[in-house]
Length: 562
Image 1 (cartoon, helix red, strand yellow):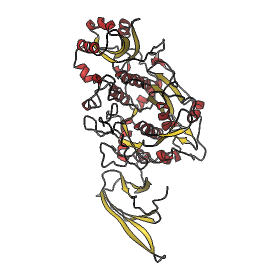
Image 2 (cartoon, helix red, strand yellow):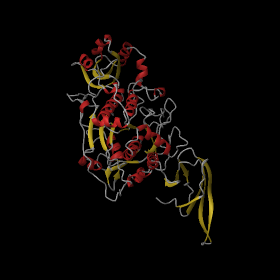
Image 3 (cartoon, helix red, strand yellow):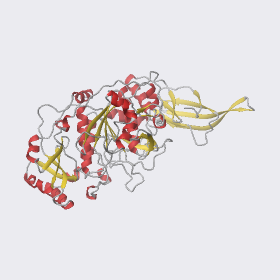
Image 4 (cartoon, one colour):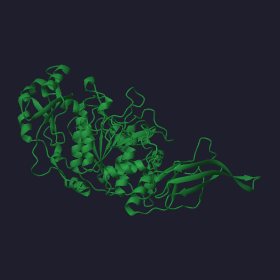
């Protein structure tokens, strides 16, 4: 979904905006409006949790005016029986109300009003009923541990886990323990009942945040999308299904009304972002995007997707500024007339995820970049074609969409945060770019390539401790991965090993290439459709740098293994 750009609104007077909403919607109907203020108090206690303050302190982030709520006197002046407050938005210095348009006439002459913007039709059941959504309390313990030998039986999720190297991190006993992930979605039907989350319920790692559509705490009574998405992050059902980060804690927020498409749902996302920040989450995973609305007058053009002009882009940027990593889907418009990513996937500080199949081929539906500024989007890809996810009945099925590749990546990021809690969101995204499979040739389809979580771990470890084996060679998805710090030019030859007359060994050269390496990670593609997996191969490498030289290195491998 989408909302009209803030730049567009700020360039129009309050009165003209109001007339726009009058012409667009019938007088007398109950609608949702965003009322923005031009000032706010910035004194007194900052209304965020100790966990949030601790996260910010880790990155040297100070509190500022954005952390204070809107002026309560303004809310008191505006809200009444006929103008119902849905919620306030401190980052936008605004409130969202439900009312008839004519009830807002008296605000046109108020000097504290910056703008009044029509944002859609609220759910019929949207009523706060006295709940203070700014004071949601959450907590829990973590007592579950995988088997002592750290062996996980992945079941049907094996391909999507191994494609991005997560099995290697699981072997290092990284499961996302202690990492708090907020999930924004359209609903989490039966997530409190299915086997994939039985350990989470037992151990206090599955928390209801808030339903910003109906304005209550019941998130499990509608829509299966969030249930499937959450399973990719953190499901745990040995032998059947394992998510990327089975020990991560999930905080669930319903922001999307699947029955409508209005900017109001963008603002729901913004409110959930504020709450998630204030309670101290480490990450937000969002398989949502905004491009087109039920009211065409509110649609975006691609020029609006510059990472800073939409309601939701402001909130996403603010989350990152507060030290929260944001992972968002690129969208599923690749085969449509729109083709492009949505928002907040357009935000440069957001880790935007596209979809590939199990062979690393781009999904035809995966939305394309770049954003309006020409910045690389998506950032990386993961398996979003025939991805295994949990159903609301306790079984598992295969689905398509960047909605599923995104939470797989979110879980991977949780493992990296567990191992390197000092890494900032911007640092992590930079590492992901540098270690993905197409890091030297990013484009508007794959971004920097398929995520390689194990390679990202290796580089983070190197940056932290300053040591790597030199060179380090590993097989990843039928590529040979070269991890080095000094070498810039790589020459390699690939040989098939044969035996003449059954006992005289000889080698047949099948590939030769020289690469000018500009990254610490170089991917050498070994497998082709014609590769004969019944024979062994020798890879002969020669590494050079301007400082030192390395002698020839030989390595035997079978491409049919693993």
